[in-house]
Image (cartoon, rainbow, N blue to C red):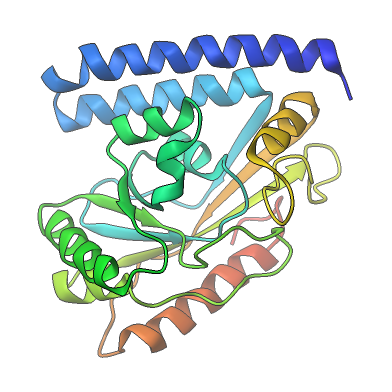
Length: 251
């Protein structure tokens, strides 16, 4: 573990988070959505650089909405990585709202929060998401519902896909990986799963070297008569296929 490097990165990251909060407070209200997205992308790419995380994008990010992105979930870094590739409005468990510093940041960036385990709140969120999709937003969800180690996918929850069905919006499968830059093998540092604490995962990332985030976009698809459960099954299979391509191969 490289303590001096981790501490230096931590100090720079905190300063960058504070700068992001200042930008949200002073500039977001007067910018167009397109200008806001450019600012978010620039900020997140700078944050990944500070953290020592290289970004590689395969496939084509959506140019505009309406579209619902569904991705596998590995780390607290996932939102930063996906926003660095293509900014969107995320749907996240309400726990993230209380993350130190990061919670205020992702809240200010327009994250939609859903209460864990609440069927009533899930219905409210489906209606809200459908409204945002009808307005042309790009939304992102992690249908596994929690993080995994990145080696195998958990089942996809289908509830939030109802928003795309109601809005007749396409869904875009996205595969996320964290790998070693040289070998392409999975990198354990960013993984936030099991007994790992948020602080522990952040510190492991700050201490690590050679971390590469790989974002692979599939092809957007419409429901075409599938109900949400059948669609969730097919989307999971597609994300699994994208992950099987390997970090150095284009799908």
